[in-house]
Amino acid sequence: MRVAVLGTGLMGAPMARNLARAGHTVTAWNRSFDKAESLSDAGVIPVRSIQAAVTAAEVVVVMLSSGPVCDEVLFGAPDPAVEALEPGSTVILMSSIPVETARSQAEKLAKSGVRYLDAPVSGGEKGAIEATLTIMVGGEANDLERVEPVLRLLGRVTHVGPVGCGQLAKLANQLIVGVTIGAVAEALALVAAGGGDAAAVRSALLGGFADSTILRQHGERMLKGDFKPGAKSTVQLKDLRTVLDLASTLALHLPLADTASAQFERLCQSGGGDLDHAAVYTLVLPDTADTAARP
Image (tube, rainbow, N blue to C red; front, side, top):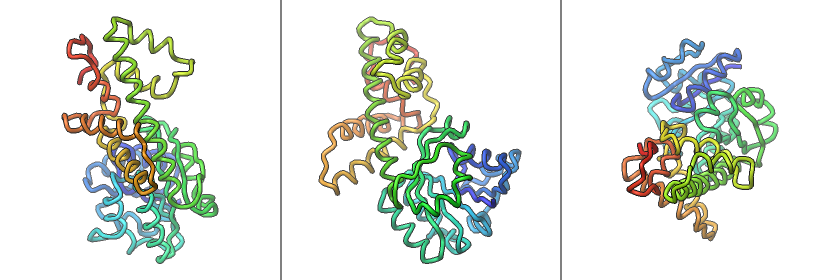
C-alpha cells in the first residue's frame, strides 16, 4: 500500500522503517526534514511538505506530539493534509490526544470522505523498533479491517470501540503506567534506604503478585540510572493531565492520578522533562544515597 507517515521522531521513525521494510511505499514528513531524510536507507521517501507526503496515500499514519500539533498538521498548517488527502483514504491517528479532539478530527475528515481511526500505542521506543507495540484502535470495524494488515506490522492490534475509545484506552494505560512507575520507584528506594539490595529484591519480586512490565523494564532502568528516553517524562505528564481533565468532566476524583501527575510535574520542573519517565525514581532517593541512579 501507499503509506504516509507524518512525524518521524522517537516513535514515528522506527514505525516508518518497519512499514518500508515490509514492502509498502512509504513517504515521510517531519518538521525537521533531516529526521525524515535519515530514513532513506530503509527505503522511506522523505518529503518536505505535508501535502506531498499524503498525496495518493491510501493510509496516513500520524505520530506527533500533541492534539494541537495534530490539528495543525491535519487542518491548519500552510499546507494542511486535509486539502490533499484522497477520498476513501484512512487517517490513523497514533498520537496520544484528548478523546474529544479525536472525535472532532474524525467528523472534520468525514466531510472530505476520509476515514479515521484513533489508534494510540503503548510500548515506547523499544516497542516501536521491535514492532511489538500495543495498539488500541477506536473507529468503525470495517475501516479497521481495511488497514489492519498495515497496523499488524507495528504490533498487536485490539479494536476497543468507536472513535475516541482508542484514546480512552491509552489514558487508562497511562494512568496505570504513571501510578505504577511511582510505586516501583518508592519500593526500590525504600529497600535501598533501608540497607537492602534493591537489585536482589527486584529479582525476588519477579513472578510474584508485584511483578509487572514496569518492575521488569523500568525497575532495571532505575537501578542502572539509565534514563535515556524511551518515553519522555513530559509526555507522561501531558497524558496524566489529560486523564485529570477528562475525569473532571466526568465528575470523577482520581487521587492516585493526582499524586502521579504532581510527581511528574515536579520532575519536569526540576529539569528532567526530557528523561525517561523512570527518572521519577530520582525524586524519592534519599540525599545520602550512594547510587548510580541519579541522572
